[in-house]
Image 1 (cartoon, helix red, strand yellow):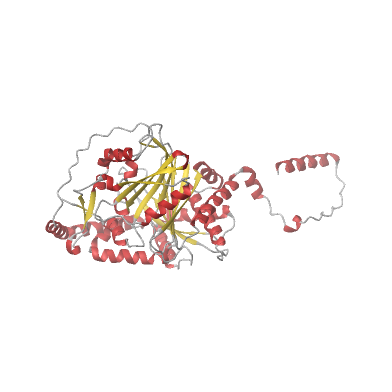
Image 2 (cartoon, one colour; image 1 turned 120 degrees about the vertical axis):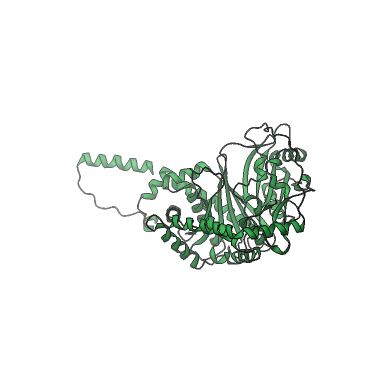
Length: 511
């Protein structure tokens, strides 16, 4: 029996247009081993590992008449060398040249007649390095237990692990008549499935309405957030087919130091950094940034319980108003930490699973219309997407090559000029900014603003800086070059004068 796409996965196919290709990606930079690394080695590595991800040898078949969601079928003419490609940078092979290449490759949609993924070996990066760019459709990697091809080629040791031999033979592709018969069979079963979906929704509703109504209040708050008009921002614009790509990076230890100094979570620190960067970027554009100015971000956050025995991801999407009008970086962080804590405690993730399940009610044609309407509404709900995915904090290798960095690439929704993704890996945090080429010609400026915002928050976490921050602000009049008039001396005891002198000397040396 063919494996049918679920409602969530197929929505990414319905959402796709020429200006909004729904593929995710990453660009990883490697240091080659002494034996070297080339295209043939990468192809051999993927051939030996692709059995671990069977979906990457399957393609999408649509059901005639749109009677049901499409299905995954084996690609009988699968050719790994079509999907694994080779490119090279001209000298000197700078990272700026790499980013330009990434933007051009990510602009092109994937071929829907084949398995929906590509991988590029990019040679000629300065310092003897190379990059691997992966590009995979959202429909393939957004499932409960889906794994991307870029993950299975990595090892924890320089010596690649042994994988059992692959004896794959593609299954016969179903005919159109068989696909229609399967769709009719699923429609016959749909009443029972619908009852199960309703039961799932009611279970979530009951769970959410518990705890003295806390969750119900949270739902109302979430609805009010959506109901409020999204702030006007240059981040929302008509987008075209071409992309730009920019990057920034930080040390995970620095972000944790900020968290220890001011509270919250590492994700809160990331959002505060982004808020500070957006504030500075808006100013470079001459935009008005009032004290109450905000940028609304859609932030996917993991809500998976540690006690869950079932693997996979549970993700809730929160809407967070980033206080870009606040000039103090610590206050920005504190406001964001408070809002995120309120989101998590109020249960605004209600229906995340139930909504996906209930989407199975609608015929695919209605689901497609709903998905497109959702895309059209994106600019009225939020300004940009920010994703933060934690990675392993130890070195990884591909065919013996050490992975030095890994930058994510998040697709754009309609009217979204830029998306920001983060991946933490081996002590580093790597920002990837995917942007529309025409709407964001200054995406590199935004990336630099991220770097500056990181340094700004780092300064507040240093003990000496925190001490200064707690002192009362010095009036501007004291900054004059004119010498202040001395106050008349008061008679004091000799011992007191010495103590005061020592205290003053100590304060001066600390300052």
